[in-house]
Image (tube, rainbow, N blue to C red; front, side, top):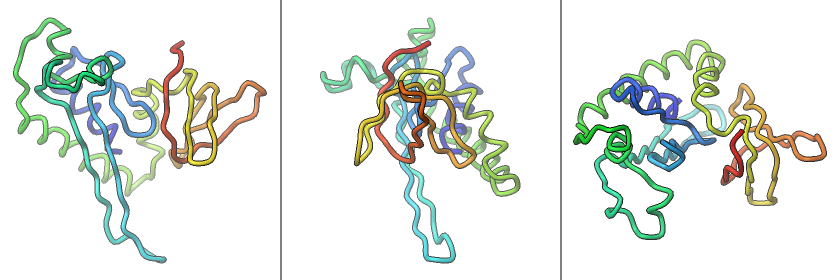
Length: 178
């Protein structure tokens, strides 16, 4: 939900940008990471007590603001807008308000209908589905084509032998885009 909210908030404010979701919760613009999202759930056996969402967005950074080791893989909204021909300072309060609006709307949609209504938006914004990936889990490394996400958000990877691996949590590296 959070990734779709961020993507659509950015598109709403900056339609010249094309933010994409790299499973599960990174947002890339022009193939470079702009946003990372972390979630934490506090629950008991029979109920969820809290869900914490951390959204880190590179907003007004310039390339030299990033450490040298990540300058080639990181971007900011300001840099992406400059790449699109517009040199603007991003209004962080406006961006936050737009993200919160989408997050509220999508949370309500999720509570009423589950992930089924969010999933098509997630798939439309995905830069993972349809591409070759390397998924590094705690137990193994899976290489193959990301073919789908399930209704529970689980990534499905078709390996070279044709079998489908279900990935619940992993670091994902995009290998080749089709």
